[in-house]
Length: 260
Image (cartoon, rainbow, N blue to C red; front, side, top):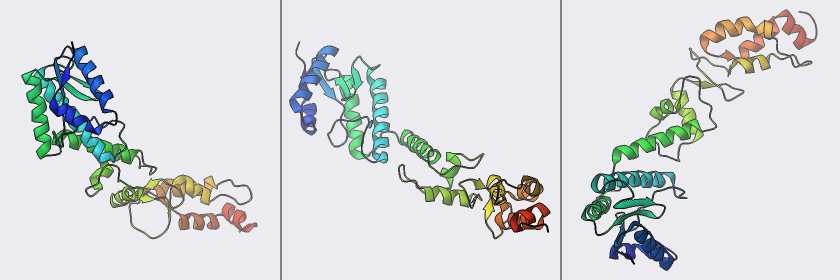
């Protein structure tokens, strides 16, 4: 048995560098499935519908292709039964038995739909975009505060696009949510009151109090402040730490080298 390809599929193979090899391979695929003629699902431009995996295009294009591929597979399954009978999905595309009216009609409906609109399933595509942007935010070098996830940040952004969310956008969103970055590290704090100064996380506040000669922080001196005011306000402040250190006997001695 020697299978043949539809005229539409032969026209679409012009995009392949090795047309003969592709045609021969597809004819072998059709023979393996027991089909006399084989077609492949095309997009709105008459090219083979691709799955979007391993692309080097912009992420938005890959997500659109992945969504259309999944939707096309659902359409083929609903119309022509389970994958592997009247149709099949491989790395080359979605192929089908061109002598089957059910499979051919489903493939035609897919191509017609994509000729007038770039998406087969808006809801699926939106869900994929949302998930991709959440992953992008959560994988960013910007560490999110405790209790905040990528979805929280994404809701604060104004019409973002996959692959285009920057660190500055995430930081602006966190600021809009009431968070303030520690002045010395990347930890985000939640000051309760707006005040001038340089906010510090607990670890950076302790580092600010370190004794020059030993490098050891004045834990006992700062603990009442950190457990009290700083905890209630959501942040310590550099100027507070310095004032406390200078005002304590231990801190004064460490700073000035003599007793107060």
